[in-house]
Image (cartoon, rainbow, N blue to C red; front, side, top):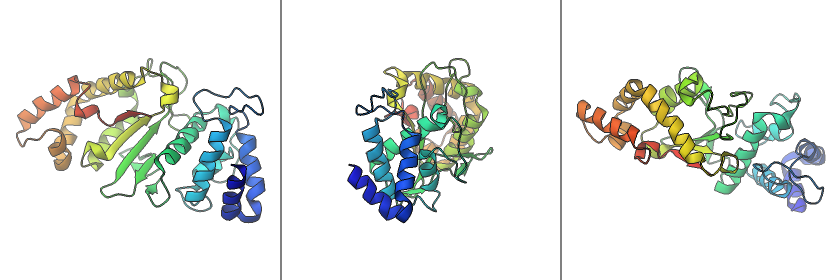
Length: 270
């Protein structure tokens, strides 16, 4: 494993490979590791898994120049894109975001050619997306790291959701704007959107918990969401399958009330 990692680092970084690899190992030294006795965090990859994920990422993404690779590679070293050190990195939400991204990318076998962007601005507030896939029409993947019922800070250096019991989704202005004025206006079908929640962290009742949160959002913003879906002709056809607006509204209300309906199909726990 280490031989493969070294090989990919040599290819990507040349003479700097050893220094870069050591920086990554140092920044992630608290991951679960039987050899060094660390118990690690139950919802992050162990050290051997993490090294395989880094190995895959370095081999398949431009970590030097492209926005598709540089940001996550810098985070792996506990640094910002400009190279400045991020203090206390492993206790910040972006450490969970990094872990989820690397695990998901390797699991899906994505390469730089598959992904248009990490962080495309979308919606009125220009909140950034997580992954925009290179398959027209755009396919969006929003990765969310949430520990059910936790009450920590939200949107701290990486859009990690927490404290949903105290501050539900429907009250989170940037999140709501990104979903309603961003994704629902951009996509032509719910097949073009996935909100992927970190299953390792969310827990066994996580999907049900998240659906309840989105149901609260749909009910709170019912008129606004329906109007956007109705004005998106392709999404209207995908969800409502009618040209009669009154019928469409009735069908939309039925979809909202049934959390097993197609309206909730974009919610994943992986």
